[in-house]
Amino acid sequence: MTLNSCLALLLMTVLAQGSTQILSDFATLQKMSIEELKLKTEGHVKMWGLDRIERWDLSQESGELVFTLRDDLKAVAPAQIIGTYNTEDKTWLWAWANPSIEDKLKVECPESSQIRGGTSHR
Image 1 (cartoon, rainbow, N blue to C red):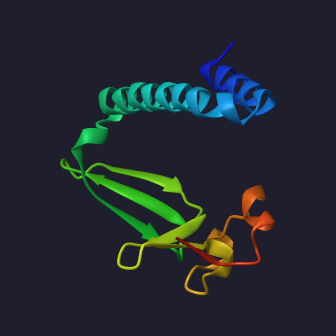
Image 2: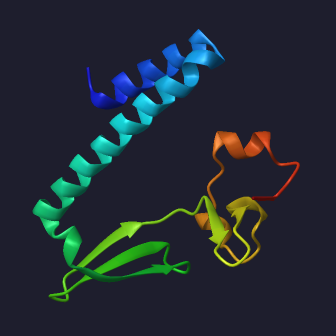
């Protein structure tokens, strides 16, 4: 069983148990998720030098996310945007509600369709 399957199973169990158990089980899920992220990050550092990234750029025109490393090596990946976060007023804006994001880069995740009543969340 993969770690993702274990996390999904843990989350389903947590939701089925009720709210008193959710807090402690969520802490376990969070801890496991952080450990998985650390392992994946370590793998990316070793595999292609994630720790050598000097900058990153997103081109809405091409739809590409470009990571530039110290030795001028570039890693390019297709990009999608879920939303944007404003650090000044600490608000989130879903991509579907943001006119400055190109339509081809907007992602409609299932959760966003449930909250379309409001477009900005604190």
